[in-house]
Structures are given as structure tokens and as C-alpha cells.
Length: 397
Image (cartoon, rainbow, N blue to C red):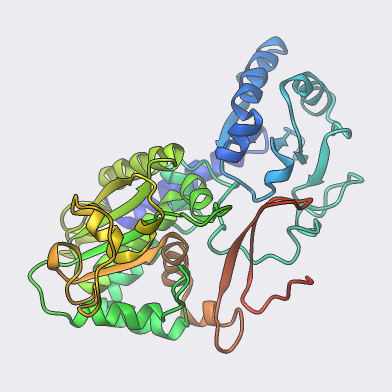
């Protein structure tokens, strides 16, 4: 099946998802949402929809985290009249009022209403994009989190997914690396090394086999950026890994994810299976002659395994201990072969850059630091959650 056909099918399914004559209930069910009781809220909706005989005209979906973890459980209700309202702090006891008010009477349930999802709604509520926590954001890495069903690859495809790898194989690996250099993307794992330059080192290294690794071993206390992306938009990260593999000439990619992230691992496993079914993993991807496999390696949670050489030791089945450098991973990494390692956020940005182009990405941020950065807001603050802002954004914003 051609990529164009896949896109057409996905757009049809997305159109079905957006149908105005069917109501939709989107429940934030990432780890933060589940901790607040989202699964119980889903059960309550199922019961209440059945009570009102709305099961055939109303569908419920689990979505990722919108970033406002302090407000979970977040529920977006799209009624058949087109009204789209986001509710916060939803508990099972609120569900009967939500269904009765918006789905039966066509009016928002104001005690739990937070915002409308479109600015032109004729309701006395702020638009989602105007909320203080949302307004300053530019969501690239988080572009699909809380918007799509992360278990449905068609949703990802319909919103531009896998256009990046399609463009990559059409332009060639050398051009892909030049595109990454032009974008100005720097590694988001902390070192800030230019991603395109790093890929170039691995591309030029000699070796009969090469590897790419996604570092999802998020060990910093209070950090949950990577987890949220993997739970809410796993295909964005896996597409980035696929592009990195194509660019450097690797045939195998690893996602190293700590076992404390069971939902993220579940999402990754489902996404990889979907990729294989559609031909994005395996042999002759998109008819390009490019063969690629993705494996998941569960980490035991050792903080040191967030360091790339320790991580590779762990994948090899050894104790996670740092190696001296040189040689650097680009020359002698996993199993002694040339290896490129990027973190979750970097790879999620890669798929967007290859889809929309280096010029688009480099127009965001500052002269020396292009693009955006995600931050986990945690601790003794009023609004815990996840944000993504342009590089150069001031703390006062």
C-alpha cells in the first residue's frame, strides 16, 4: 500500500473522529490522569451513557496529557451541536451532571467547566488557547498529546505523521543530515550538542552494523516530560528514531525505557506493532530499500543509566557503569559498533522538523538556541504540569 493511500485512509478516519453528528468524550488518561482516577471516570461515563441511551451516538476515548496535571482528571466533551468544552477535576460523581447538562440539554456544566476548545464558541468561558498556562506555549514535541488517541496510528497519520520519514527517504540520508543541521536542533538531553552534527559523525563512522538508541531513561527527580510524550504520542518518537536510523545507516534501533513507566512501554509496544503492520518497521520501508527494526529494552531505574555509555552497558546485559571516552559512541558504541543516541524530546522534534522543514523550526527560539523546550513543573507550586515554550522564554512569562 502506498504512503498516499495510507494518508487518505487516515484522513477518512480522522474525519469520522471529528464528525459533528456524533458526540465525543476525551478523557485524559496518561499516568497523571490515571492517578487522579480517569479509569473510574471512564467507567462512570459508560454507565451514564447507557442510562440515557446515548451509547450509539457518543464515543469515549483515552487521550494523553494536555500538560495541566494539576487539573486532572481533564475531560473534553464534544456534543452533537458542535460545542466543545474542557472540564477539570472531574470525578465519577460529576459524570451524571456532565452528561445531563451538555449531552442531553446542550449546555456546559459550569461548576467543572475550564474552557472551550475553540475561541468562537458562544459560551461565557475562556478559550483553551487563552488559558494562562497554555497561551505562551508553542507545542511541537507535545503537538498531539491530549489531542489524539495514542493507540490509534490513523490519528497520528492524519495529523502529518510519518510524512517526515517519507520525505527523508525521498531526499536521501546526506540531505537529511544537512536539514537537521540547518534546523539548529540541539540535543534536549542536557548537553545541547547539535543533532545534525552528531548524526554526521555516526554516518561517517566505519562499521558493518550501526545502531540508534532512544534514551527514555528519565531519571531526574520530578521530571516527567519523556513519560508524557511516550504515553500521549509514541509514534512521534518512534518516527524520529526511524529517521535517525535512516540518516546514519543503522538497521536497528533501541528504546531504553525504565520499567517504572509501564504505560509508556505499553504504548510503545502497541505503536511498534502498528508500524510493522503498515510497513514502517521491517524490510524495504516505503520502497526505499531501507531495513529497520525497533526493540524495547526495559531499564531497572538506575540513575546512572541515563548517561549514554552506562545505558549501552545496560542494553548489553552488563552492569550500568560509565565508559571512558574516547572512543565516543559514534565510533564504538553499542556492542562496539557506531551508535547514535538521542533522547525522547529530541526525536519527537526530529519527526516534526522533517515534516515541516528546517526553516520553519529555525524560525522559533533564539539565534543560538532554535526551537522549543519542554519543562516539567513540579514541587510546591500552584500549577504542576508540563509546558513547551520557545527557547529564550523568560521565567516571568
